[in-house]
Length: 159
Image (cartoon, rainbow, N blue to C red; front, side, top):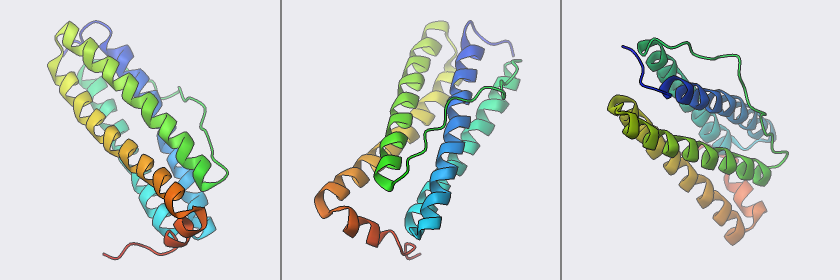
């Protein structure tokens, strides 16, 4: 299927953000695991895998639209040296992604690509939920203190 005007470029921009996020969350998860914060390690690693799945979906959709996925582009991976720094840079990455997706939804509506728009709406919903989770973690740190927060991150969540 032939892509509508600007959709391939848009999807490649989102793919770049997703591939960058995969790497950012992956290193943050590894760092948290190394520090002994197993709960955070598991949650952030899961997010890295979710971003990888999103990239997989984007690649498939780009190919469906007869486009070429740009796998060479990667934005700067922001690495937080502490858990609060990680949360701060991850929140910024998610907010930036939500902006790209929102602009993409508007563009897809304008050019009449409702399949891509629906995919971007689903992705935006997921990003919004992750923003909420990060903001909750930041607020929890403010309320209970960093040491108490981190102490709770040392154990895996009960299944």
